[in-house]
Length: 390
Image (cartoon, rainbow, N blue to C red; front, side):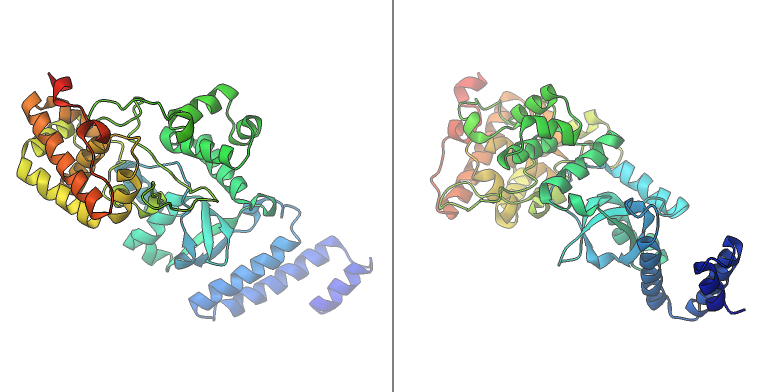
């Protein structure tokens, strides 16, 4: 009896489940033999389609992990709202894990006209693209699943990303704060944010207050020079997603999403010093750099000349300490020292602090004037006046 005849017999009630099982396995065996003779890239595409057909009839097809497909890595791109960050040692461990154990978790994605936007798996995506050994082994493909159809709205994708991060216990407080504020801008209630992001109401309120809506904190005082404008251990602002109605205003603040920031790529937001340095060593290197005015000036010149998006985003914000930001950005540019080492500023003598502040103000005003903006005083820039130093 042929396989087709067996299937017909079973469908009409004249065959056993064992007959059907054996028939399907026999057909599957024939299919795999035929597939094995097809070139790898085309074979991957065909296997994806076969898996799709199986997924359609799976009793578990409501679960994204029921269908993992391999797609070209060029079709997968990062979202601009992920609040999670992995320090260099952890990134190295992730790469080692994938090299040793293989991909054990797919990347959660949302299909768009551009390709597949990452909802969860930003760093697994990076390893697959940037690690040459991994990229070669997986032939330029990445394993992905699609987020549930009911969660494809931007707000729902943001919430899904945060839920994944919080389930692993990893997220940046400052970035989480910006996302909470953004969801409130999108008319999400505190109750909905609390439910969707797995927070209690007090946490929602606290995150709203950390960076907050500018109009709610217009009277907020600047912190001391060379410190971030939040005294909560964060390294500054992460505006991950622009408001839907954002339109740049002439001589107003200019905003850019984080993936465009040159300071981000330079390691400004890293959570620890590079190269295995201790926090104390990082701060000491920061101090030495700032005390060398010629090196500091060269870095300032580079930042205001080549860091277009970072300078526009930060130096047009008159509610932050722009003197501090320029110092931290220069250290990231010149010696790859992140802003978490900014305490090195306080190791300078008062005269050295005054000289560093004055140099940063000089280049801030040079950038402002070159961009048709008014120059500012030290106080307007967020730094400390000479009287406050003494």
